[in-house]
Length: 67
Image (cartoon, rainbow, N blue to C red):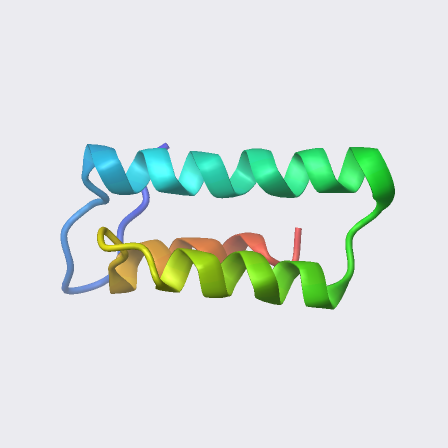
């Protein structure tokens, strides 16, 4: 999956890995006990603290939130 943002570079491998980690955590939480808005905020806050976070990565996560 090529995630890009206007005016920015595609996600680097470490950022793509971080996005995949986010997806797996969300999927695991949904299948094991359900998923709340608080869970989502906790995961997003965790991602924001990561040293490899970028605007493009946060945009990719924001696009996935509704799904």
